[in-house]
Length: 352
Image (cartoon, rainbow, N blue to C red; front, side):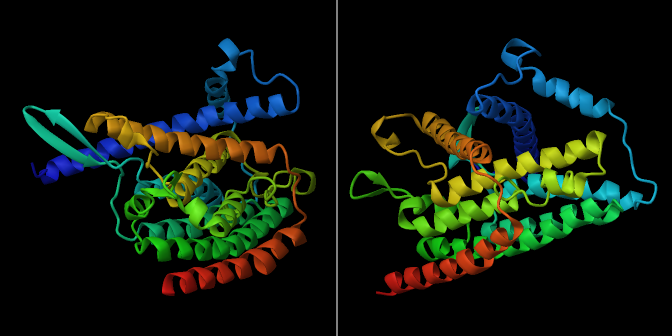
């Protein structure tokens, strides 16, 4: 049955609401997971006082941020100072709109069957949309550093702009080889192209077909989300807290939300481009109903995203921070040339 315009609008609103609730809830408990994993790595106890096993700690953190005073430096540009965290969070949440978290799902209702695509916006240039929004994210960090009227914040904003622009290049170039294989800019087409098996048993994921592009994209994602070992824009020993030194209360909380929302979105993009997205290996042998197959595919996607997020956390508490010259050398002298060579080799293989 063809959906009416009203049904399409309601479907979009429901999807947006569900995704926002899931992302914001995941952000809250991702912070708790990071604190628990870091405590385990450092052989100490993490949060364990607020609720059983510390499960209510995120709620306490949110209440604390809401109750904190919003302090703005007297010489700061108040409008831009307020706008910067809003930009960062808006970009982080908007990027998820084109990521498919499942194939389709068919739901019977009122004697009819309704089929929905499991993504907010089915855009035929999804990759370009992601790259465009990612490039806008730098404005939030740069404007926050400039508007604070603080030298530490300004240095953090400048570092952020240089770092993010540098690593966006290698990130974009690493995607090109995936596009050459998939022959599409649409993310659900890229996921479908990763169906089937290599050598009869190995999932046909781009991680195996394009290992160099996979490593470059993951490294660039760490730099784009300002996570260790690429957290030079914050760099507490040098810049106090970098671009958000002069932020407090919920404005600081918005930057915190944006960082972890960016982690979730970049993990989802990594899973989509290189880990088969919602493809669940060997699921066709289980004899599941169409509805259960759709739910299993969503579960497979969430499992892959969770695995990448765990990798983010483990790397943060394992590898020390780079020096700034090492960061820029890696981006310009190693990753960009390597990306170009990988595109050339991929093109030659496809041509031959």
